[in-house]
Image (cartoon, rainbow, N blue to C red):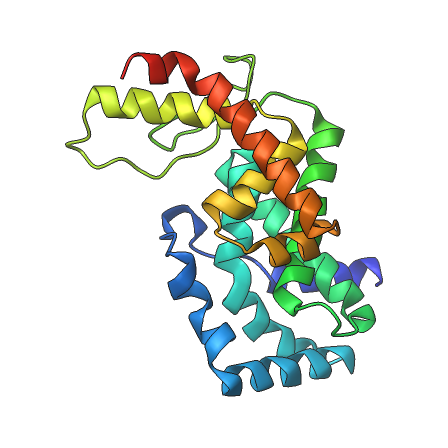
Length: 230
């Protein structure tokens, strides 16, 4: 895709309202796509139009999945602004390569695979510490040696002890190796099934299960100081 077309496409894919977006439960977000055959047929038709060069057909696909892709990027990178950029980059890359989408994988797992690769590639390139405070405000990247994931905005009556525990959990998750953090995010945060995670990561289901088991053990070890106090 030419630079001008890419810029035009990128501008048309701007993700709006992400800072105040609610993170709905997975079963609510995906029910229409997994249970409604009419929607599935409509999605297939939109994808086919995109493959034929109709960029206008891409807009509904972006609107359908932008919340989930953004949330994945946010959990993996820790900054809202960066997550927006990465999510937008994932959609641009997906649009550029949609002609090669053959339908053997489910579209949303194919899209999430692109998003995961975009985030991992960006993190490997930057190699910088990223921090994100518990109340949702960016902090100086040099104020902490380890990254912290963004959490949901806390209600005003949240106890200081509960806030401290949540921050501890988020820091522990953020300190995991990339592959562990990725599989826990997909399974325990986004609630993907093992088969879906296998598609996204392009690994056998057995690998997903063993990686998730090791990831949970590693996370539990990091959380042990807090667990001992309870």
